[in-house]
Length: 75
Image (cartoon, rainbow, N blue to C red; front, top):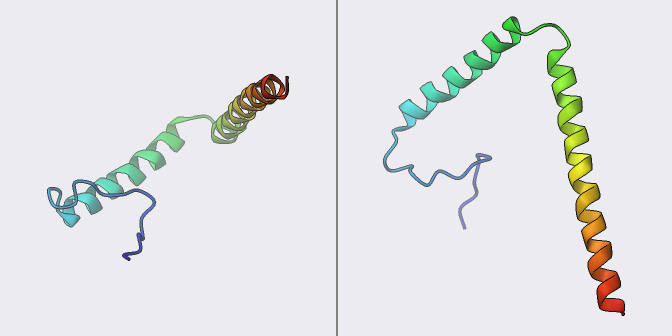
């Protein structure tokens, strides 16, 4: 079995050369750096906190749906 070293699978690995992927990764990193210089200080932390709250809200919705399903099967 082959181990994956990347977070994302590469379905088009035979079509996209490794060199092109490296350039894309570098461009992605540079874009992040440039955005950080354009945004006011604290924006990244605020965005991260907001994302966390959205995920907590989604978890609450899922928990409520699970409770509803469980109570329906208990009846």
